[in-house]
Image: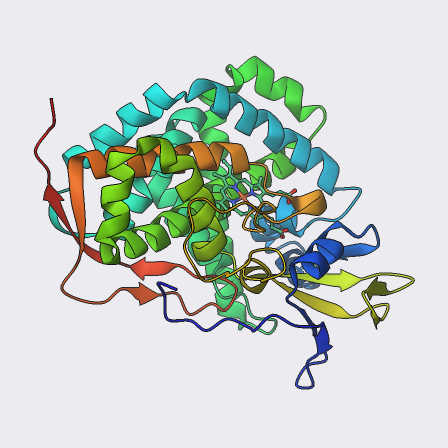
Length: 386
Ligand code: HEM
């Protein structure tokens, strides 16, 4: 494993004595939880924001609106319309960004990258930021500013934050709200074909919910794909043999991306709550109301699903990994993220050899993610072959 975080060994579901949460690590059990009809997403920032907002008479309106409709934290009936809206945006992006256009964006990004770099800020966020910026009608710098502001809104959300912390997040949310609405009021949303189409969509999804869904793309979706790119770059920097193999056999890019999603996926676990009737997994029953941690990174190493699971195997046959989740919240951007990843690594490796930087990378401390904050790398230009 390329990174230094330990993962839970695979075994039967068990109830953790320290907090009463159930830990689910086997592949079949993980799928069972994520797809179960009586399982919902666990306590969300939206509930906390709404609570504060109510208490203070709407003083945190923008914060509550922004985090209150994040699709990833919604359950039915709110979840469906947000997800449908995101499907439309991501489908249009997939249509707009063929392999050739992605290659072009990666090539432009690489013009600025050579020598000692921070792989995260200089490479990994670049591609998703550019594609989303163009799609939503912003410059790349504006997109980066929105993403960084959004990160502060969502980062390290504590149940009992001091009031000034809510105030800080409210003012950042206000800034994001104003940037999004001002741009769309004047130009509409390019990927949706301008202003008229946006107004039409608003009939099925109120403006604030639409904004929150887009906010999800700008923040969590972009963070996730950038986090994945960083984990893979870290692996490649330490595995020159894999770099050579991908250069020699670019057609292996698809298998490479699948195997790296399985072993280096950025989302470590997802939280769910079991509903009425409880949930039976094998010979264990998780009771009604229980909090469950679905440990994606363990399920992706379950030897029943993936024999010799720690081996990086490009010829591996097995079920799709759980890197993109499963069930009603299955990643909407999975196909598009895979396409970006294949082209990003293929084009990058044609141009450069990737070497570790002088200092080790620094990981985020949040337990749900495996993602670098900084990743020093050295990019060494290669001779063009032709
Ligand atoms: C390697 C990159 C990515 C990974 C590993 C990833 C992973 C995931 C996972 C695990 C979930 C489900 C979370 C849960 O069950 O609670 C999810 C949801 C989602 N992802 Fe991704 N994602 C990636 C990239 C993207 C991209 C590029 C987009 C859009 C352009 C995107 C859009 C979404 C959306 C909209 C959802 C919410 C689905 C819902 O709640 O209904 N993702 N992603």
